[in-house]
Length: 113
Image 1 (tube, helix red, strand yellow):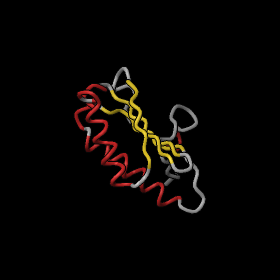
Image 2: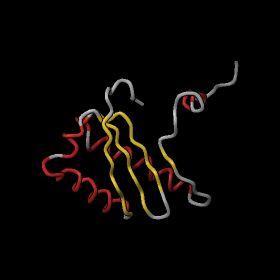
Image 3: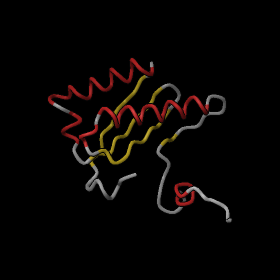
Image 4: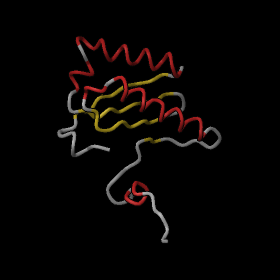
């Protein structure tokens, strides 16, 4: 049998990019687990919003979450109430300063993970 290659890792240099952008020497496993928890939390909380991709960027103590969605109105809610609820629940769960940015993706099927 031949060598098995991860399809995402194989295509990274061609047509895909990483879902997380940060660098950590000592706490790599903890940071990666936290990123995956953030992505699962957001996807579970916003199931009806047609989320195509979630990117996590980290600076020293700030975390920025980019959410690509076809329906940003569902996420934002009335007067931004839903965004504030999500931000507060993320702050309570992860104890870090988190900024949430929404970007409209034209077609959910084109940018799907």
